[in-house]
Image (cartoon, rainbow, N blue to C red):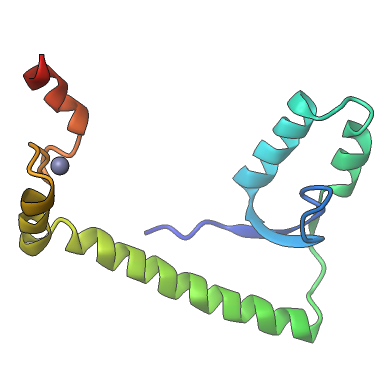
Length: 118
Ligand SMILES: [Zn+2]
């Protein structure tokens, strides 16, 4: 599991929290969205204020950031455990009971069943 690299970013949106923790991909997508869809007269200000913040965080923000990091790591572990559980023998048996379609962990693409519906 690769943990994405996060950056601090100011003013992702006009009414969003002023400082957010995002991936660079999210920042790039937001900038592209602004360039493509926001009113033309708003774009320069939006793009100017949407900034990556590289300054060291003050103590209170560091504390909150660290807590968030711990929670994120725990969340990622829980997600991975969930992903393993749903394809375990018990998870597959549960799928069979509640759904019963042709899905299996080795053939997870449910659209492969389209041929059998026709
Ligand atoms: Zn199914």
